[in-house]
Length: 253
Image 1 (cartoon, helix red, strand yellow):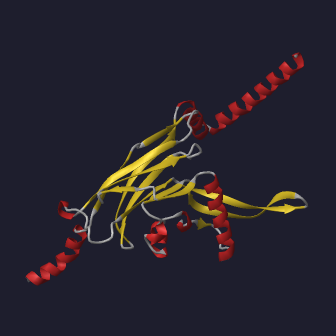
Image 2 (cartoon, rainbow, N blue to C red):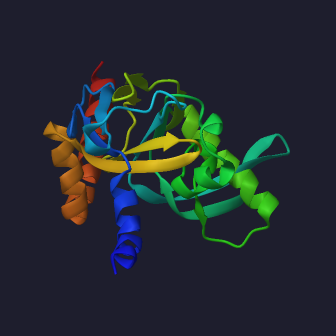
Image 3 (cartoon, one colour):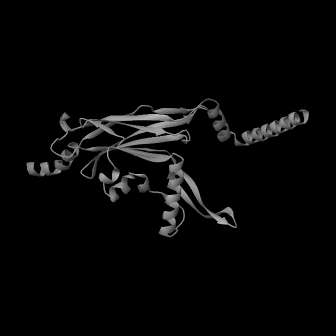
């Protein structure tokens, strides 16, 4: 009876023997005003080992990977083609969901920490993002558009990797700094932290970050969303008014 009980409790005891992550972020909310030029997020935390113990110094140290993701969105990627000296839209592909923002920081290069399969499961790395195309294009065409989407967002500062940006102190405390660009979209972001050792993810934890507009920008965005017809009419009226005013000044001077 005792032996059977030990067999049943073994998985639970093994689960409890794993370390636990206690993460946090320097800002749980970021306000975007007209003067917003970007922000720097500090992600920090601690690794709690079983029974309050210390990390095993006889084995390779554990690594930390931090991933910040923006809300997913539907996006369409168009391929440009030069025809008779003019750039025109050629093929296109629509994605049902793609992260609007993606940043990853790690204590060492990702490819040194986990294999390709694990990277794909946890989406560790820009090249491991699981995009969702809405069409059944051939694999080579899909790969071409995937690369195009990632490249566009890399150049816009919305996708990037910071290898070696995570600092670990005494195998217990960690911290990383990641930049949020001025062009960041609004919405609820997630900050995921992974503890990795010997090619395996031992623990994971998530914190949320809200990025929202403030001041006049928030009023404009809210008006466009809640009162779209009135917003459109006001925008047209202001355009006509400013156009008429500019014409009147031109005729006068």
